[in-house]
Image (cartoon, rainbow, N blue to C red; front, side, top):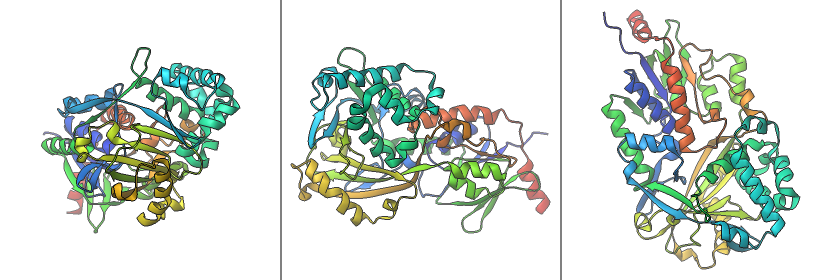
Length: 454
């Protein structure tokens, strides 16, 4: 008698959940993908901004993003990547400065020669470190002061850390700085100029998600969108019950939960107390991100790092410096992100309140822009974006295969030697799905339990 295909549910339809569902279906599993939002993509989802459709948050592809590029090749759209040389700017002491190649670095006015030498040494050393684990036991600020000195740390590094982490930078390990430097140093091309090159798929993540959905549907993955999971519990009959909004409930042999750890802990009340506590203790950074569609360009920097504590947003991302403005109707698309603690009151501000906080300093930074040049201003808010890499972070992560039989919790908090980005997220999925597929099959448990009820 032929054994039935193992029934899997993947809860969470971001890029992590989508790749897990894809690989499970390829391996012959019967897969249902459950997503609370009416669309796929999670943090990588797209939206309508004025007359254009583009990503809710800023994303680019690096040449070194091998896993992401491999998935795009599988989807048949890697050839749609458009590459561009980009520039990096700094807003320091009320002025804009480029630090986009080696020559501009040497001429960078805000730093003296000693500062520049120490900054170069810090970046070069971090880019060559492979034994990242020992950096988890050192505070980022202490490590930076050791390598870059007090003046450079105060002038450049701490404003950048505060912009990304708020005051949480004080408890963040040096592994965070290492991973950030390692990723972006790899984006620099070889040669004396060391210019950076980023890519985007024509059409942005809307195009990627559309194609990914087509492939999932072709593979027989059942999509339940706009359907929040309410409770996940091991059933007495051996399967896993997933209770859904509206009172519906489904039985599965195994369930992979990809939502943020605090949410996963609420969904799975039957976790062992210590396990549940481990998920609840993971601290997250959220984001308030303004998207602006503008009539005029800004400074032509893909990223402008802000070294000014009075500016209320993290930086300025000028997407049209990396993507042909034709995709934005000939206009400029810019993002103003503000990273905050997951419980920060900024996440509850109305769009109007955020606009009142963000626009005056933005217009001060770019005096060539007036309010009449702003075609659209929209706010995206996410409470759980990135797990905070505190000291000895990887030593306190909960196990992926949980104490609940058939329940596995895997999310971006399990990225332990990188930064949160799509490539690292997909790499995590590839690593864990291989392990999940190697587990003993539980096929038929869900069907047996349904049969018992009948």
